[in-house]
Length: 94
Image 1 (cartoon, rainbow, N blue to C red):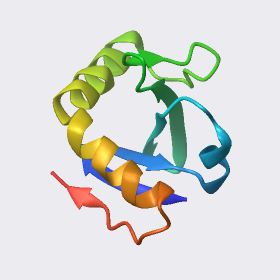
Image 2: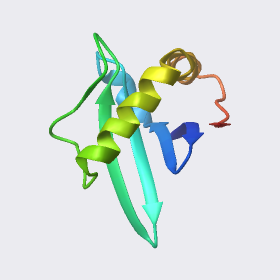
Image 3: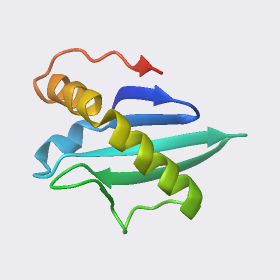
Image 4: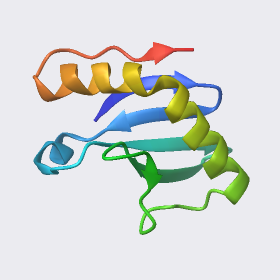
């Protein structure tokens, strides 16, 4: 697992097994009081939630996450490029 970005209460990450997937995407988690929420967003061809992996996020939280991804898409893709090329990735806090 590679943590790519930490913004507000959300951690944006990727898993090693995801390298085999054809479409780039990002997983987003949020931990509160020992309870973990997790979802998956496709980054291409456009940003959209993976409807099979919405987790227990509310519609408001999913909109907030989508907005964060839109605002930081270039940075997320740069971090993914490092991860996919086998280079070390250090999580960026914003």
